[in-house]
Image (cartoon, rainbow, N blue to C red; front, side, top):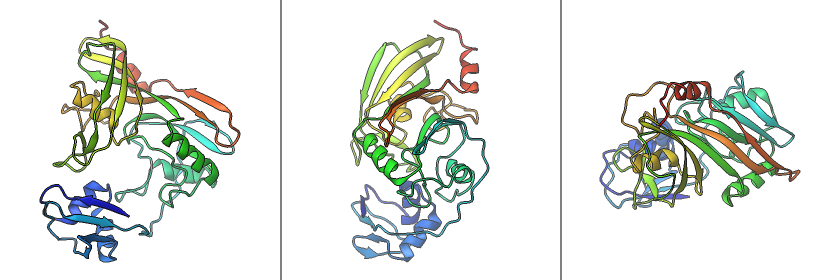
Length: 297
């Protein structure tokens, strides 16, 4: 069961929850009809107007009948054994179905590639232990069985899995290193965005190291102590150096490639064999080619 306290008046509950839960209004409406969503412990309607301090309760157990079609996809597999698959994800590829998008996700490609995927997270997220944003590129780890999934999930929770990101930031960052310790929560105005806030937020810590400075840009390495939604993108915007080409958090004209943010390295213990593994992948072509055009300082 999940509870959400409404922070200010909102005209419709279905629109509010569609943004807050990253689900379609159609799904939210079905959950309301089947009384999986209550307001102040009472059944409600999709059109209900919300008031400040209303308490929304979302019950567990709702199952939507969906048809996720296996789709042939050119997966860039960096490593695979009987328990895990490590994939180098391109920009533009959503990790798993949701919000009415049930085709052309990484999960669709995985289902075509193999029948051996964990089902810990249900039919919509087979094998998915963690996520990266649609337009963030780089390494993502997939579990091929439930035992591996459960062990990896605990390792992520206990910070035993180490990940490193590279990003190109707008502006010349003046310090060689920095730690951003600022809580992140849902944006009250645009529910599809996150922001640094002290309201309904969670602790978020990002460590930044400068790799190279260019005229008007800075290339940085980033390590996370926490894994909040859009964490790097929100923290970089917060300190005044947003990720270059980020269509959501940079407030500048951006190409379809999306934010220049790349999950470049991962270190983890193979969940069953206990072998220590580390992998690194280079920047995607579009990222590297843009760097090659920049003037170094």
